[in-house]
Length: 203
Length: 203
DNA sequence: GTATATTTTAAATGCTTGTTTAAATTTATC
DNA sequence: GATAAATTTAAACAAGCATTTAAAATATAC
Image 1 (tube, rainbow over the protein chains, first blue to last red):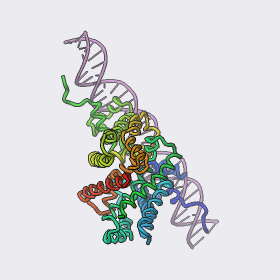
Image 2 (tube, chains in turn green, blue, cyan, orange):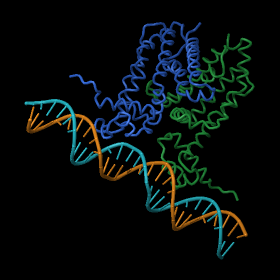
Image 3 (cartoon, each protein chain N blue to C red):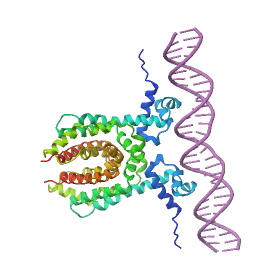
Image 4 (cartoon, each protein chain N blue to C red):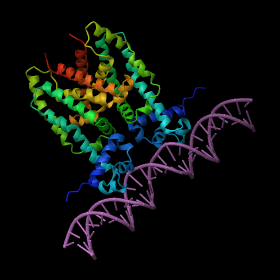
């Protein structure tokens, strides 16, 4: 018989993801998670053994979520300019949908990198995409500026992610409200696309 | 008589800055700070009333430290390309000297923006620099692409700050050790300079 | 329907947290 | 050098923390 009510384990997992993303590992208590999941406090340890174990499980998911949609685009068989444009659009939508995700990942890894890299096979996948081949071919036949994947990928990602990670400071610094910021981010996105493409593609 | 030993208040302030930068507000305990300063636990509250008050004082300093050297360059009477180059070099040196500073600022503001913007007069200063005039003149006479300060400034800052904030993830992703990363960051810095200048300056 | 396994609960565990106290010590004032 | 003020100390505070317990409630198996 199919059950309509969600399994407790999943309820906790989803609640924990929400709270961890918002408050970070240090800022989150087991009671916060239990309250968000509307469950008894003892259940987090019943299902996940400890706050640390629960966090590591969720962090792994979050990191894969971050890379997954990007991976699909990196492997598409499309022109490199279109690919850059699509990668930036994809990043932009992700930052709008999950505004806490990137700063959360960056901050947690920065505070304790060693504990957070288990068997990240997704890293290898990112290193071996079709974009890499495209790049090497373009560089070889002189249509692209000599760059490696590790040079171009951060240039594609940093523009959009930076202004969203620092959304509140940008709003304060340039005296914008949320509506202003939305328009500003859109125009900034187009600048980034043009700037990166102009730089990578010769002529 | 000049005293060689540092005043206790300053010892605590400096210790607190070190610990807060490394562990963030939530990850830092009053005992951490007292230990780092090698002082009795009660002294943090004797001099600063609370952990929160001490943090706010330090955060204000840190934010001004972040903007101060940048402000000087923004107001220099030099060619706009040289200015961009110098801003990026300056950012680069700051990230090497204080690797925790930017991710700390970003994360703390992201978690609770309202509590961290008191009388930030430095924001007004950033808005009204000579670069703004240079930009408007260049755009008016057609030598520069039509952009405002809020468009160009993040483009200048995001490249370097992004790879340093995500140093550990970049090392893991692209299989670099610390030495590799150092070289990589230098070459990335030059790409960023060229890319931003090429984009802003027409022809 | 009873026995067994699973899930949920309230309560308590011992430890750490930020902060306070009141006494002890050092420094400054005359 | 005595008196007052400022600083430092060890100890304690209540509240909150992650985690555990053992009993209660529910679901599953026969």
